Length: 401
Image (spheres, rainbow, N blue to C red):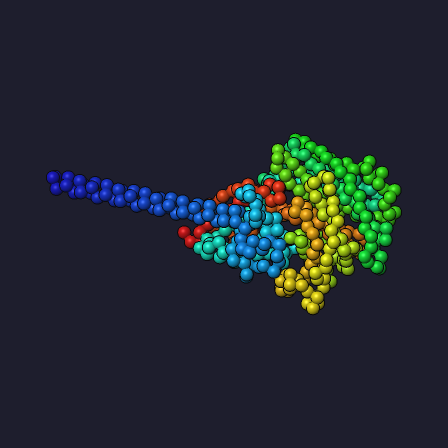
């Protein structure tokens, strides 16, 4: 009997030892995971501060298109010389944009950027989204000229929810040419500017109405609608936070990027817009400063077409791949300019190349493969880009757990 009790006691002791060992191992594993999580968080903090608080090298890599991921020595998005933290350079940000409908020839390879950030063992994605954006829909169009004279504007936050109490200012830029799209260029281009402001309601929308101003302007416009086009530039302010956007009837006619002084457009002789040409070697710059509103700048053609003999160094970098691009250079770009508008002809009708200095939709940049990592860190910061507010998120994970 005593022997049986001894066996029972020994068995209980063994069970207690096994449970104790398993508990210790579980605590050890959890401790290791906690340490790894804290280490990943530390790495994420370092990376995000590096990206948002340093300008990279060379510091002018945003505006100099001859600087690529191959000759860049350091990566950062901060505006060089800024005295404030979390102020980003809009041109550097635009070099991370790669719209699905029009690839960016100045785009930086994220694999090389990961190497510059010493992230060989990590995956990362950066997201940049305007704190809120403005979307315009025409409600009424003048039947003779095709100019929209009334718009519904909706304010949407970065979580795609309507936003009330946004102060919206819309600048309706009416562009026209008495000469129209004849056989000879350049031709004189004139413009008129109409302004309206409203505040969004509880549904996030408001109505901008230019009807009366346009009726007064209409007698001075050409009688043919082919000689008239327009662009709506939008500015929004919500409790100190600002955004900008635009609408143009021909915004899908030609896809463009504005990076530094350069307007980059796709060159394709066998695809739309067939035969698109600039009507005049000038560009309109839209400014949020309402005392100036629009300025006219000289445009220099860097390259149009497929003749390498006429290409500048910037053209050679952009056209190093299979596709060809048109490149125009503005002789001066106002620091606070939000858009550049070039007037062209397509199929005998005036249209506008509208290039935004800022991303027109949320941007995802990095190694965009689907993340399966159990250990993932997400950090968020609020930044300023020329006074416009953006939310930035960094997703960082280890390739191997």
